[in-house]
Image (cartoon, rainbow, N blue to C red; front, side):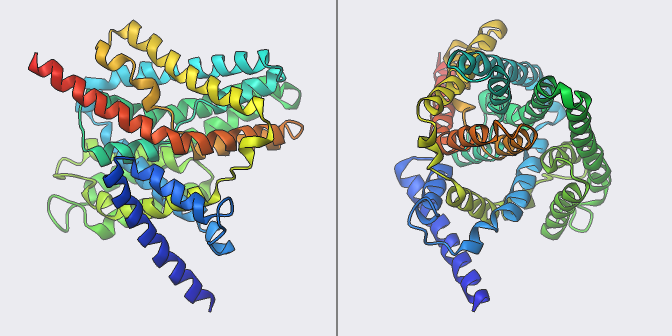
Amino acid sequence: MEQAYILITLGVLFLFGLAADRLGRMTRLPRVTMLLLMGLAVGHSGFGLLPPQAVGWFEPVSVVALTMVAFLLGGELTRKNLSRHGRAILTLSISLTIGTTLIVWLGLSLFGLAPGMALLLGAIATATDPAAVSDVIRQTRIRNGFTGTISGVVAIDDVWAIVVFSVCLSLIGVEEGWAIPLIDAARDLGGAVILGTVIGVPAAYLTGRLTPGEPQQTEAIGVVCLTAGLALWLDVSYIVAGMTAGMLIANLARHHDYAFNEIEKIEQPFMLLFFLLAGASLNTGALWTLGGITLAYLALRTIARIVSCEAWARMTRVPKAESHLYGPALLPQAGVAVGMALVAAETMPDWGETIMTLTIAATVVFEVLGPPLTLFAIRRSDGANAKASES
């Protein structure tokens, strides 16, 4: 009987996903938001229609889905794209990381939070949701300098987020040994890069040989699952490992016509489940637990993203029509932030409940409201570019 429940639930979730996709096209809302709202409605914060074991599927589904996203994001970091947008990607991601950390830290400290807790929350606030941003870009099918830059930023800014978070954690937890968080971060990121290289280099030369020009679907699934599984086994970042492998394949595989065509074909069912289950696992109760502090944190992160992007745009002389769009486009936040919050809660148990509550609250808001703002920004950038070309 349990197997019947699993199959029925999967069938219903896939059909829900199809309905959400169609509804998103009709209402011009991002598919991500529609899926999250549907998941929220059927999950424990909504009508509780999903069987309890369904929420347990979220972790394995998210690992595979996010590894696929990482491969696709890595595939965007080609020599051509990096030569065109590389400087913008690097400077914007650093500006966002530093600006968000400082503004959230100072703001929450003035609001009355312990400076150490505020610093950790500032570091956690720097993380974004590459899956949501990438999905919105693919939904619009708009390719321009703006989408190229934000694709690159979400590919690497979680790396900066982990580094800054580890530094902040080491500064606060000096009595327990400041070097431990930094060593853990170096092991996580360095090990992921090594793993991505070990998988990416052979895959670049071996895949796409059976069917000339493109890797087969079986090859794509095999490489993605192998990367995700080994990353979990070695306890390193599967997102960084997938991004590294994807970047190497895209740059080294000269015999590929399009290296990630098969991943894009198989990605959709995983992404549907991922966003539906993400919505089902969200805890809306966290929004009200801390009242004013929750609102302050949400407002400070939003202001920090906008101010950091505006400052970067002025320093780098970004076209005026696009300069106001980067901040709203980079608001979505999800898994990496929750992961850092869990580490912070374990390391600083006295602050654990507050950090987890604020992070989960931010995830609910920015996952639901962030993608529509990303969609708005992308469409505005396309309109601005069209007007510039006409003039």
